[in-house]
Amino acid sequence: MNRDSLFPTYAPPELQFSHGKGSWLTDTSGRQYLDFIAGISVNTLGHAHPDLVEALHTQAQKIWHLSNMFDVPGQAELARRYCELTFADRVFFTNSGAESIECALKSARKFHAEQGHPERIDIIGFEGAFHGRTYATVNAAGNPKYLEGFGPRLPGYKQAPFGDMDALRAMTDEHTAAILIEPVQGEGGLRPAPTSYLEALRELCDAQGILLIYDEVQCGAGRTGQLFAHQWSERAAPDLMATAKGVGGGFPLGMCLATGDVARHMVPGTHGTTYGGNPLAVAVGTAVLDHLTAPGFLENVRERSAQLHGELNRLKTKYPDLVTEVRGKGLLAGFKLGSGLNTAMRDRLRENGLLAGVAGDNTVRLAPPLNVSAAEIEQAIAIIDGALESLQRVPVAAAGSSQ
Ligand SMILES: *Cc1c(COP(=O)(O)O)cnc(C)c1O
Image (cartoon, rainbow, N blue to C red):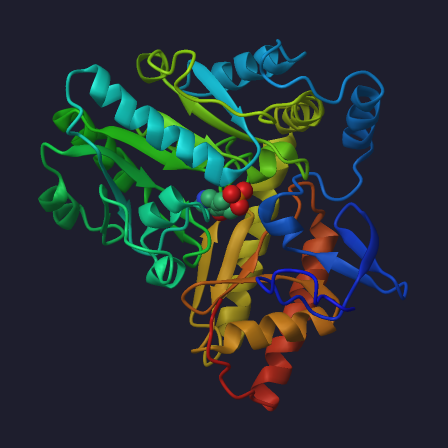
């Protein structure tokens, strides 16, 4: 395929998919692949789910787009349902994860400004975080690789070491507006923050009048077996939360959720979006939520998660020299390999019919559709087993970059 007319930002393999069904993708030669990356944790119900196809099709015959200058059919109702299911009182719809984070960051600063503290602008993020590719989000995550060459760093962004409460406490002061954390780090290497750590963050924020922002763009939408990952604890609710990816099931949809106290300052003129939560996105997002809240859906996610993690741990025991750690939470799972081996492993898995991703810290990332079957997980594990076995027999040269 000739990609000369595209920005060279991506370098995909020589492979073209023609269609998908459930957890399976078919390429143009007719070969089938088991999709355990699901558009990076996006295709919640797999490919071409009939309910999502129908929701999109039905809405497409009515109204595609209005902009938010008119009431978008179904939007307020979808927001109401998410509020009922979470800490939130209000929702702002977006098209992407980065935009959802942007809305959360702006809302946090606006909140303090309205309290008479415009000097409280600092957002404390964490090392290894990923929040998107806009200016604010690359500054919030602070990954030097994503900042280099794009001008000076923006003021008001700091990073604390992940999981170190004392280091974090030492960084908060009268300029701190918010703490921003992924309850499970995705790109950074599938690192879950312990629930006790999130609870401690909540306490710290309450004590110092700091807002707590979760980035559940990747770990939300049922991925960990709760609707949102922080809901594994009842004492870790945030003030703001960004989500996207899985909530649209493949249609671009994101949300910034907030308490009423915070959201009430985002009055007309303060923020906006042309496409965010448009009729097509809302129709699909509503159908996704119907599934996420259907009886037994999250139970299945938990059962499949236990199966996947159990099997990955078995492989770790079987290949102790290759697999150094099993990572992640729920169906956002991964395993850590020796330096630079994760990309080689991902390529070998693909050659053997399993689509996986990589993440930081030499991890291979697995994020299958949430309605994946037990048999499909068995098939994926068999392919991983085979690839580890071949890697043990024929080691590859470590391939530099891990992401
Ligand atoms: C993917 C991701 C983002 C950015 O989402 P986009 O839709 O690509 O803008 C932000 N945060 C996390 C945790 C993500 O995984």
